[in-house]
Figure 1 (tube, one colour):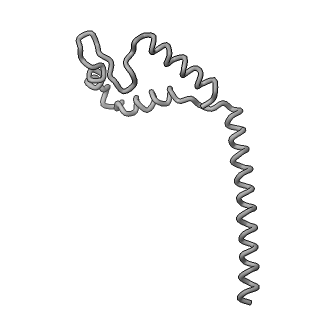
Figure 2 (tube, one colour):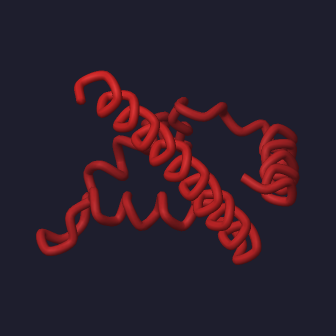
Figure 3 (tube, helix red, strand yellow):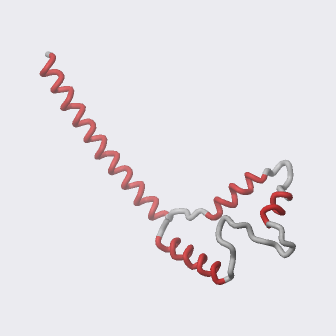
Length: 105
């Protein structure tokens, strides 16, 4: 998560605390005193649109996606580390094969 996204998340949490909203995981109470989660479960949607699919899309909207620059940077890091490890393992393979040839033959 980037610095900007963390700041925005902290601001949103502060705004939520100022409104006296219940903490995460605690269902909000409606005016009738019933849980909002219970009323949402009752209206789960149509048979062709299961609730879990709408939950997936809801979660994907909340994801903080990396920027193009972050993706390029991390891709470069993965490529460089892969090349270094490949060379290191290849070197060990050559070394051990030379040792085995000298000992056995």
